[in-house]
Length: 309
Image (cartoon, rainbow, N blue to C red):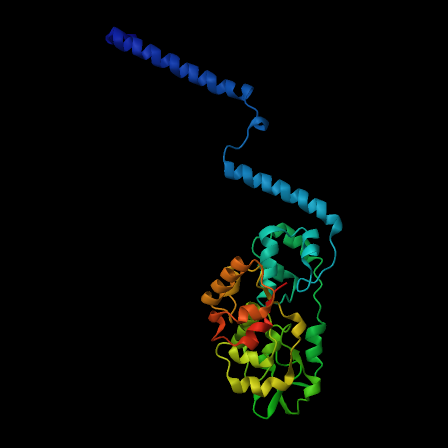
């Protein structure tokens, strides 16, 4: 060994010594790390991870705060203020309302998981308090029968939900026993009618939303793909509550809000906004109907959905 060492040049001997010292210092440093390191003092450096931890802490605090105020509720009818008391806020609250406005109906407590941005922990807590009103469904099950488009045959009550177990019988549907209010009915109710399936039912509800409600059964003929004869055949089973109409305030609504209505195009919407800007305030609906851009419109229909206050 010493012969090998003596065989090295002085430069190589110095390099070997320096390398040995460095290795020794690294070993000592490695052994001393536990004396200076404490896992409790370590903080995550990833900002996304830090934000996630903060959000989870806030959520736990929020659930703890509202847990004492949890109460039974129906997700199909619960008000905005009561949803906020339950801890549903922000995007989750907006999506909850949009889902109901689209015509969707919650049928079980687990359906609230379908709401985007609703935290899963909060959803699991709320599921224990969901109480869905089944009186609407029961009311139709108790009817004598449901006409469903099988010639002179009709599907017996309680069997239309399961196509494999359908059975038919001769019967007469009495007009007084079967009524659907078209401004509050959901897709499942419309699909009971003869000639109207899931697709048309969804279109009826969607058109009702953008329209602001129906003031006449005849408006169902405006639904895309709806045969006029289908509406005429089912007319005796339909009713309309005009008090549920949502009107457009021409003194406050934006250009976008106005032009999105089926009875108002872009040019009429722009004319209303310009007229309002010049005059300051529109005093009556007749002022809007007298605009030249409204000349080719059905003014009787348009007037139903406009308001000045």
